[in-house]
Image (cartoon, rainbow, N blue to C red):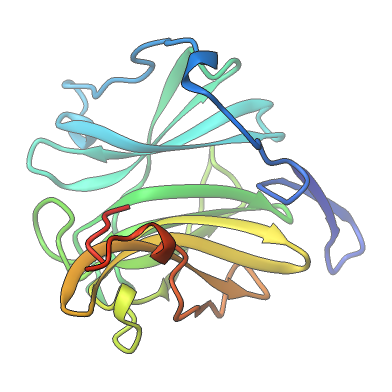
Length: 239
């Protein structure tokens, strides 16, 4: 849903994101129509000549288009972020590589970027992603990183660094941090994400959240995961 807010200049800013007044309460598989493949890896483009995955979509009022960001892998498993635009969510036009890793492990993305999520808020694009820090598929250690820019067509990215690191003191997310999904509710930002951690001696992926007063952070991870109700008694529930 759309939200409006006031910037420091007093100007009204608009952004699109999930909020409590626009939630689908029920969806059955029988209601769906299968469309098929809408985006393929491009063997002729070095940054995505391996495979693509992890799409995330917003409506962008600046472009008057739907914008998809996705993980693109080269043939040697180097991961970066690609993007595409659409008028109808079915036919997509690729726009190339949106963001490559910095190559600096101190910033959290020394070897690649995956699992992107894009928001537009207060005249700025926020790109959250999983930062990879060793070679290969999902090379560890893995943290959540953030980039911002005023434009997608002529981006000037500001690297905000690691916004949610591995939480050594919180068991459910003490090994790796994965896919970010921020939303705004009741004056607070929530970052839902899955993570890998060791609970009662079992390493598995589980879901939880962090909160912040600003999209830039500081983010505080809740020590109580939200996936516990769905886990087996041994905690071996992969979500």
